Amino acid sequence: MALDKPYLDIPGTTIFDADQSRKGYWLNQFCMSLMKAANRERYLADRRAYLDEWPMSEEQKRAVLDADLNRCIALGGNIYFLAKIGATHGKSFQQMAGSMTGMTEQEYRDMMIAGGRSIAGNRHLGEDGSAQPQHQPQGHGSGRLL
Image (cartoon, rainbow, N blue to C red; front, side, top):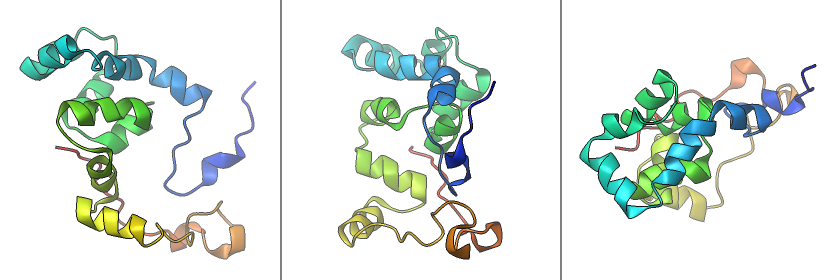
C-alpha cells in the first residue's frame, strides 16, 4: 500500500524520501565512491567507463555525464551525495546550487545574502491561491554543473 505523501505538491521540489532513496541507491553509492582519491582519478580519466562499473540506469549515467544535477535529483540523487561530483570537478556547493537555479555563482550568493527566495509560489498547491499551477514561476535552472 502506497503511503500518503502530501508533500508531493510542493512546486519545484523533489523530496528525498524512502522511494527516492531506493531509486537512487546506486547513483548515490557512485557519488560516495568519489570520496577516495583513486576513484576520482579513475572517474576523471574515463567517466563513462567508471560509470559503467555501477548498476545505475542509463538515464542516471547520462545525467551524470551531462552534469545535470536537477535530473540526477529527479532520478533519486541526494544533493549531499551529488556534491561529491561537484567537488570532483572543482566546483563549490554554491556553484552547484547556482547551476541548478539558472543563476551565476554571484547571483546565487547575492540572493542568499539578501534572504533567499520568496515563499510566493513555493507553498503547497492551493495554499493562499499563490501556488496554483497557473501561477508557477517559469524557467527553473538547467541544473548543468559543467
